[in-house]
Image 1 (cartoon, rainbow, N blue to C red):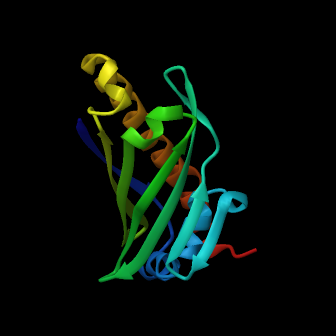
Image 2 (cartoon, rainbow, N blue to C red):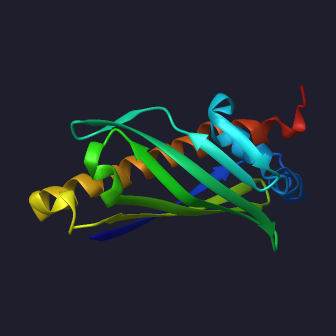
Image 3 (cartoon, rainbow, N blue to C red):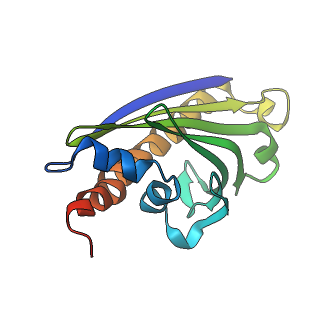
Length: 170
């Protein structure tokens, strides 16, 4: 089973010029640190990161994703891609679930456009084969909606707040 959902969010940044937004996004460690908890973000090199999410609930499970991220500033767009995701808390089902995403952060005048595509693939031949497909689809939809909502919240809160401080460095 394969599900894919997209979400686009506009971050309004009054008084922040496009070149300031681009300068901030051009160094991927800065926006990633604004989006994610610094305590859970490990820098491998200038474009590769490992992030251990805090646990959250999906259905009756408490899951904790660990993401391997790759970022690149190219053609005035910051690209962030989840190359691998390990999800703890699913027991034997962990190997049957694959979650990946791609994000683009595009600088604009007094704004930043964030576009995310999230994908969830479930291997129906393994341990998930005993679960009814409608239930799996419902849980998968819930997981994707939650993941996208968390990403949007991180953009609107952490990333937006950090970019708004570009005119008022501490």
